[in-house]
Image (cartoon, rainbow, N blue to C red; front, side, top):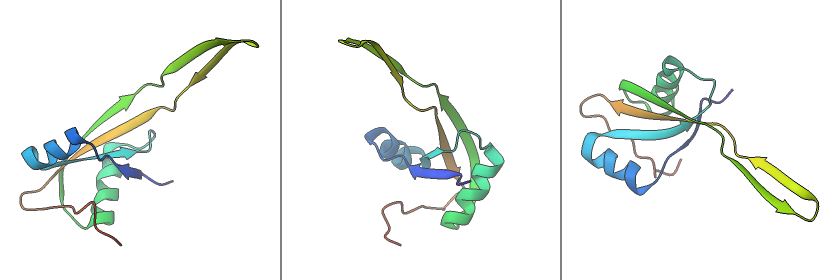
Length: 96
């Protein structure tokens, strides 16, 4: 089970990185804060000070077609906001 799916790269996430030193990641919805902390420390070699998580519910959409009502939904998402220890930095755009 992979804990970290991908980093969130958006204007707001970059602003919070510059302002507070926090990094945002999409993570597995079944993972907890301890697992997320260990996964980030192992993947990037940094010391994590704090982990906050948010769960986004699936969005349901429907439309009428010739075949009737078509209903679909997106996946459930979990986002983790990681605050690093003082002086630590993650280079998300680094090429491995």
